[in-house]
Length: 139
Image (cartoon, rainbow, N blue to C red; front, top):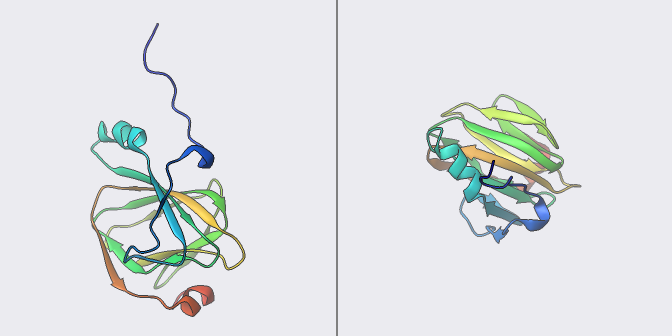
């Protein structure tokens, strides 16, 4: 039987792009589009998939999505926080953020963190976070 070959991804072979200037991020953040994964997911309704890498202390700002977001920890340590809750994220962790829930993603001050983001909806930044607030946890 012939067909498409297996697709394997590792951080070393992804096409990382600097996203530090994007309005949602603070600190050194890179992302890598994963079109093959997005294509496979497209057959299921079209969510997008990106790998996102945060330098130590880097974070998103408070934001919301119009659909659920699935985050799959790849490397390092960090956290995903809402106004009421906070969970750690690291290799193998899966975090599901409900649609419309304000949250942020952050690497720890001592470690970079990377995750896969699976998302079908739109994103809106709701409030900027000062670095000291992200380092202290929820604010």
